[in-house]
Length: 550
Image (cartoon, rainbow, N blue to C red; front, side, top):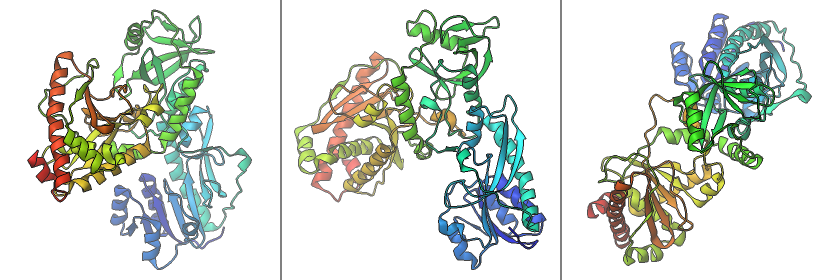
């Protein structure tokens, strides 16, 4: 690969490494014709250096009128098309934080720690149509520490990326770099759907070192973790195992729990002991390991060790659901970041307690006739849900967010409900100037999108850092197949919407408040029926007008 000393190039990607590599190029006298990024900080860097930035590569190509010599892809999550790969005159080059051909794909540093690697490298390689298979131009090797975490290894890769890029530029200037074919027989590849085994559930029938490495592989510090986290099942409770150490093994069967002389909890794995140093709930709240485990065992009526581990069938089910849900996690994060909670009006602040008996909600004959005659049977649930959302959304609030559950979702999570959400959030815009039919269409779209995404791991909140806690959703709506469905464990009030306008409500709160919840739901239900019937009689009325009538 030979080129003159000075060249034209474009940068594509996000993160501070893009700017640091860009600084190297500018110091060496090379010309950066465009920066393609959706990273606001990198856009600011480009503006400061009077470099045009574009949202995508096609826009950059259209605006340029020429071709760069090189395209450098750095921390770029967008897979380039064959046509885009051909945009640069000489070569498109990608930075990958692994020693290719090993650990191609995503979460590469996590998997290297999980598999116990002692040495590691970053790679600069030619981009070809397949993922991470192009010729190697340069690699930079370094060692891993015994206590290496995903966070610390990512930082090492960043530093190695800066240093190795300077070496790469020197080689491109002199033409001394010789591309080297990858030995694809040594290739390992990890996709987005590849997460910690069994949805992260720890099986004590494992080597202690493997369990400890899983903790370090999942330690991203304050940054997003898309790999998953190791979790332990204690009675009916699930905890996140944040930090552990390999120690001497307690006597007894696999899973035997021992409290050592320092008051630390140690669990017997197959070969050694695992000391539980740090434990949290699924939402990330820290809990003392000793008291949490002992209390959970007592509540489950388990008087002694060993800790149980889930049957193989349940572990395989968890693994399957985790693989299918992983591809939609980014979408769920967007939904969770945009919640607009609503509540039943007229009831006091509720706190979770025992599930109370469900109470039917009366629906009059007129509403039932409208639902059966005016709307297709397949739309009945969307109409009912839309009526409820319109009735409980406060005036001035632009949208409504509630939990939503279906027979399909409950079937998928049956047996693994402690790991996966059996009711998921949906957010629907509530445009007051829209007709009811238009609003029903919006609700149907959001309901269909939620059902397409399916479920997500309950530990998602603990893996996605945010500036402030997510607001809780008080109400869940549940599409019923029969009258035996359980209420959502994640809400304080569940409204059941069954076929032929069979509605009911169930409170997950103190017994003395259950009647107030039923009364408030019944009042709202009368408003819902008024909205549905008025919309059928006068289809051009807006939501604002319908709500005023109700």
